[in-house]
Length: 327
Image (cartoon, rainbow, N blue to C red):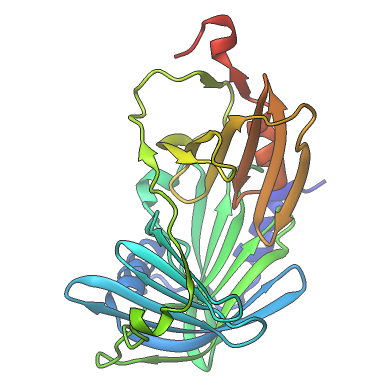
């Protein structure tokens, strides 16, 4: 029987009839160009996001202004939403609710790429293949396959615009090679004159409710902690440790972020408010979550990883302080 990796290799690595020739640049060069293009170019277009049999349509405008990322997204269907992102912050405007949420930008990942990608760091856990030629949004593209080497992470299929290096379509794939989510441009324009900051001023939202959570307090990774993670998928390392205010305001939430350099998952731990609380699994698109109680604490693991991975991580967590074995 074929295992998950064999399925992905067959579906991704052999699906295209036009395999890249030896005279073309390699997959490393295409991925490097993609990473530079997503941040460095000024572009606008419409893309669709398919997940859980739901289709969302968004308009994106991106530019680099004074050396900083500026990005604006507008929903084209469903409830109206506007998201404005720059290097430091994310502003979400919800006209129906007359609310504005302001938060700190937490990472460097942005639509429409699977980023960041450090090829040297990731080669132990993923295989990268330049599959061949394709066409998306009326533009010629190169197809790249990202094949995981175990069952604890997703695979990806990326179509990169041959002219500008922008990812025109990104599929997140399960162990059978089936799309879990799909992001695809339907229109795209690249022009240095495009500006993303043309949005309303703060005064236009005076009547709105402004929501600005207290920023998390980062804790040094090396500092002693009361929790042990006994088994993690290969390559997942602790990248961020922080303390956040809980939703109830009565307790703080300890937040751990683990990553293999491509996939990321978060662990949230807080004092349980009642016995026998949340103990369930859920998902939305490629994001899976699992909650349980451990030693009087509510523990929730969330990440853009397979359901198997969040369960595996939950089962690895131990309250070390209970027996004085904190690290």
